[in-house]
Each structure stands twice: as C-alpha cells, then as structure tokens.
Image (cartoon, rainbow, N blue to C red; front, side, top):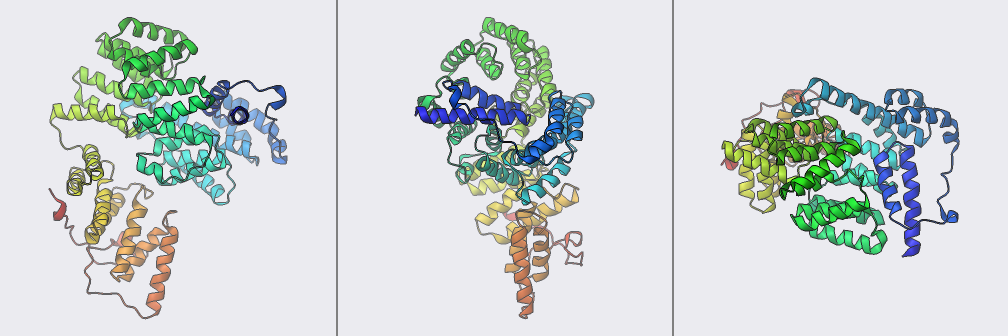
Length: 558
C-alpha cells in the first residue's frame, strides 16, 4: 500500500498546483490537505513541473499578468488581457474570470438592492454567452478536465441539470483528480437510484465521492463504512475525513460521538473554521453556553467575516434567547454567501421564535432551493404550515407526491401532483411528474394531455424555452402523435425536438420516418381522436392547427 500512497500523494501535489494555477482555490486546498495527511516524499520522487506547450510559452506573459489581477479579484481586467489566448490554462482562466465577474456583479446587486430573502431574483448575465462559447468548444472536443468542470458549472447555474450531470461525469473521466467536479456532481444527485445510473471512472477518488454523497443522502452507515475504509487505507491523519465523520454523526443525532470528534479536530487544527457551524449546532442542542461562547469568540478572533463565524455567533445569541440579534447574524452570513444552506435554515428557526411565520416560510423555501435534500428545512416548513394550517404550497405537495411515488402509492401521488398544479405550481414541475406517472401506467392520452398543458404554461408565461423538461414533453408528444398517425402534429413536435441537444437525434429520426411514410402514400388518420394539438404559435411552420380541446383530468382530480 506504501507504493500506492506515494503515487496518490504525487497525484495530489500535482493537481493541487494545477488547480491553484487556474484560480480554483478550494480544489487546490482540498488536494493539499489530503496530501499533507500522507507521509512526505523524498526529493527524488517529487512530481516534475508540468511540461510547457508552445501555446503555454506564447501566452505566458499575458497569463502571468492576468493571474495577478485575478488573485486581486479584478476579474474583468484579468479577462481583458487573456483575450485571444490559445493555451488550455490561459483559456480556462479567461472563461473563469468572466464567470466570476458575473457572479460578483450578481452578488453585489443582491446585497445593494435587495434584502437577503429576495436574492433569487438577480441573475448572472454572463452565463448565456459562456454557455454558447463553451458548448462550441465541447462539441469540438477542445475542453480539458478543468474546462469541462466550468462548462458544467455554467449549465447548472442555468438550471440545465441533465446536461450538467453528463458534463460533470465526463469531467471526472477526463480529470479524475479534480475534487471540484466530483463535488458539483454531488450537489445534483437527489437519490441513490440516480447514483446507480452514473457511469463513473474507477479511481480512488470515487471512494471519497461515494462517502461524501452517502453523507449528503443521509445514508450514514454506508458513509461511515467508506470513511473507515479510507482511514484503514492510510488516510488516518486527514482532517477532512475526521470532519466528515463528525458531520455524519451529527446527522444521525449521535451528539456525544460528534462532539468528541469535533473536539479532537479542534486540537489537531485549532484555526479551522469549516464545519464549525455544525459543531455550534451540537453545542446549542446540548445548551453548552460557555463552550459555545468560547467558540464564537475564538472564531471571531480568527475571521469574523466568514459565513461559519456568523452562524456560530447567531447560534450563541439564539441560545441566549436574543432572537433579533441571532437573525441579524444569519442575515450577515447570507450577505457573504446567499447560497449558504445552514444560514437559511437557522434564520427560519429564528423567525419562528419571533412569530414571523411568513419570513420563516421564505427562509425555509430558500434553504430547499439551495438543497432539496435538507430535512431540517422541510421539517421547519412543515411545522410552520401546521401552525398556519396552510395545505396549499405546491412545492410541499410535489414533495409529498414524490414520497408517495417512492412508496408505490401512485393514486395518492397523482392526487398530490394534480393538487400542486391546481393551487399554482411554483416550479412548473407538477404536470411533468403527473405525465410521467401516466406514462408508467400506460395511460398515454392522459400523459399527452399533461405534457401539452405543461408546454402551453411554459410558453404562455414567457419562461425560457430551455426549461428542464420541455424537450421531454415534445419528445413524448411527437411519439404519441406518430402512433396516432397524425403526421402534421407529430412533425411539428419532432421539429421542436431538434431545438434541444438531448432530443435532437430522435427528432431528426422521427422526421425521416414521417417523410418516408408520406412518400409511401400513408395518410393521416382522422379516426383516432387525439386529446388536443399544438397551438398555432408553437407549431413548427406556424400553420393553422385544430383548436385545443379542453383538458380532461377528472381521472386524477381528488
């Protein structure tokens, strides 16, 4: 195992340096911390410096200048001097600078013009251009592992989850050592079933990924087994693994064990701030006021403007029943990082204590937007609704429908999805889930009704046509109309499929089939009654189509 550990250490030192060169500080830090946990390498076995290509040499001056600007957070300035650079490293820094510039402007606008509870309304304006440029490079197979990672991040930010997952999986194959890609993939996986269908590279990094995702999915026993096997393999000194084990015990409410591990971690790494908000949650639950006070003061001395520090101080004031002050610190945490899950949930708790239920609901909803797996936010939201006797939140109803679906209680699931749609579906997903249930039950006409209504809703409210499931809906309708021998309608939907990456090939194939059948003299049927057809505005050639007949969803109405 010693040889293998030496090889792993070489890899970690190499990827840590490559990450830092590209401004990926967190990935570089993760690799460095893991490398530090392994025995030092003799000088003769240290990894050699990366080989420079001609493009690297040509771009060296521009890269060196731009990297100095990048490190000072002058992202637009860095991007300006990297224009036209051809090397992989300089091109990545160019695109990453533009991405971070957009993120910084978005965060500044959020803090300046809006309260933290309204942060979701501000968008990163650079994302669409970045997606366009990176997709061209991706099609031409010109992106390295880091470039694929950035492309995946852009897709995720645009809510193109399916495409993002595919790109992150590709990134882990091209560059398995980059922890950032694995971590992004973790954030998009919602259950164990989804995990089974991922084609991941067979590498030692996969073990760290599985341990992390098992913790996220609350599969704590499996996570602890993975971490124990990594410790046995030679990573026993890793503070990252120790902290993850402490978080795992926190999640299963083994408070004594979690506290013991966190105290040990503090001895090994006394200036550590990561995960200290989780430690403070445990101290809060045990009402350990002196210890929580000491932790808050200690972190304040280290860095009082870190998100975790603000959450620890918030917990300290909450334990002293100073809820207004506590909420103020959680708000401060969210100004520093509007996507920090723990702060949203804790702020929801504080608003509940202050009897401000509407603000609590908003905070819990934002927590769920950040991470749909967060059981504490769901519990808080449920508790708030119970107090207010509100049964009509579409997100709650969709989540309940998903639970029924997993329990194979499909009739109840249908009722929940229909109810979510009827009360005003916030996320525009209830009809899609209802349609998929009808598909499962071979109720093709009802599935088609749901999909067409979904498409009408998306287009009529002026939402982006790249909405997650629009391509799925057009694909199903194209196949449905094809089976009904309604060539015009099938052709219109198939042409719409060609506008989406994931359905383009199927759309083209179906159009060829329709053309072939028409050439053979097959005519459209008039005997099979389709539920309704595409409205003229969505039809491929804007040719008039039959009137949309009313929806008949009585079969699923509770």
